[in-house]
Image 1 (cartoon, helix red, strand yellow):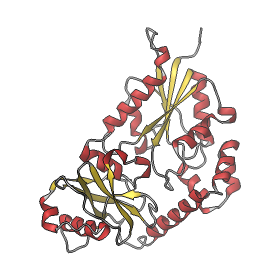
Image 2 (cartoon, one colour):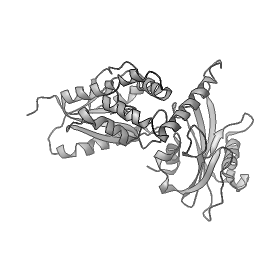
Image 3 (cartoon, rainbow, N blue to C red):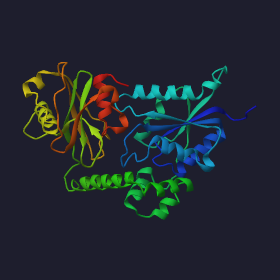
Image 4 (cartoon, rainbow, N blue to C red):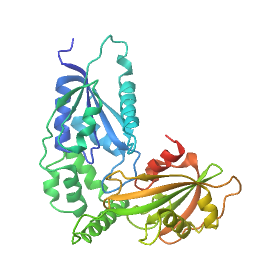
Length: 342
């Protein structure tokens, strides 16, 4: 009979990358619970300087070598930037699936382990059914700082001391890939972009527009040709000019990036909805607010399109084939909002 206080301890994180602080939390969780459920967040995301490693790669970091423990169960969940309740439900469903073999018990005890350090930890209050075990993260630097060291190639010996040995081997191996080179270019672009605004009297807020154009079960997307988001699919859109309305800016960017031959009055007449998307960290470039418009064109043959401006390609996708891991920033979330996709 177990003498531990809990049947399950739940630990939620992005683990980008797994570091020694995470490892100590997992070890504490194993000490107080029979089994530990590690929830890997930001699954099915494209690679970015903020999320360099896939959910599978992060899972491998957790289960490798000394962390490979029979009582650790790993589940993955996607972000839901504009729907906290949906995200909470996905966590609940993942935990229920991971504990299904124990569903015969009259009572199963759970705890949620984590540290309420700042506004990023607000999610800890979203699961009142699980007792909260506050565990301060024992870390010298944050994951954000670790990624900066990694992409800048500085103080790698210091970085080596902050992550488990097998994780450092993974990071070293990843440095030899083309994916790493793309991420470094993107990291440099973003940092230079931020530096260009350092002399501004206040932090800038950027305003953009995006077009969600659908017809006959297809959606119009563009392939980004430059950083940030090089090689990722995106909604046609861009920065708003000072002398135009949101609607006019959206139409202009749509036609520039896709060469869509549908007349502007027809496009405007086909607008079915619009919404502002303002998740504070939706763009790594800085505070960026976008106004997206849903345009439903009449069913029929799909108009010809061609990439233009900074879009490498333009293409009609069957809606069911749009994949979150291939989409730029929060564009999959925007599409999901308008089309009711999961």
